[in-house]
Image 1: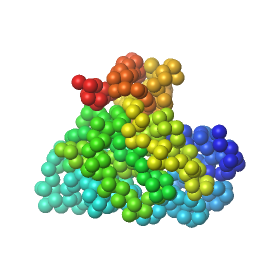
Image 2: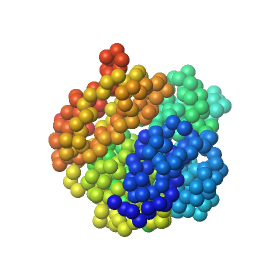
Image 3: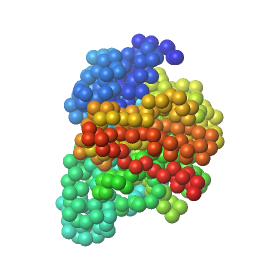
Image 4: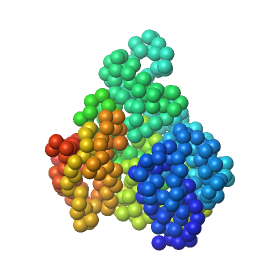
Length: 430
């Protein structure tokens, strides 16, 4: 256990459940953690040495908190929307920050990110011209179905699939309501394979830490397709390295990324990649948990160290990281819930007895209620289960076992779980 930072103060922005492990690691190092977020009830605050609330995205309020507490470092948790604030706060206090304003300008807004990607040969999803004026000539050119999304929100929030003009108009209203900048985009609704590209940066070196296949639910028509999990490494790994990797590296270098963690989400269709989302921070999906289990290094520790010193430590990505996971096969399995109050959860009690389970990050518990506005985004996730196995068949067997073992019931005894993804199809075993 690291104790070199004993007594240091670390301000962490954001308090969602996915941020809790970051707070706990800092606590174990003897660091005085301060969690600041917009909601008084955010769960990560319960784990912090001290916590604060701020209104909206008020960077000045957070800067005041940091100055009053005389913090030694600042770090953003698992929240895209707070990365621009993280950059402003660090800049105001002259503290280490892995982001710059130039990087934030590219990654904070989906439309800016998409335009930047195209300049480097990293393709985005085909888009239709439309703005809040909803001009008839623009509406007539749209080919349905389409996805409507705010430019500055994530996790499925504010996103809608539209199959006609009436649904499009409703989707635009929903996207604008969820956008802080009051901007949205309308894209072709992609019905093909989904992927994640997860990168680690240290002192200008970029490693493609995980390239994996993602699976989404089709049980919620008209809503954003929430993730059901992923399998690692991707079946398209070789195509990725031949078609996209070099272009992505060139883009990262030229916009100035030196340190940090970056996720690109993309679709794979006809041997080409179409990137649709990004996140320049730790991910709620938490691939870092699989990396820690396989490689032994923890990205959360790297980021905490960087926040306090300006260095991610002595890790050598060229030796310590491996996109092919050292021959292992891994997966994340998300359990999604329908609307209702959770009365009973079964199948999650003995996970510590299974050597293939390397982590389980549970967001909801018995007594919690899944409200309508959570359906269609990541708030409907009960838990994320992380598995590492020695073969594809062993991984498929584990995924099938937990698909059957985990059960969730509402107060009337009704099943609350959506179906998971097909393990054999995902791993090409049939």
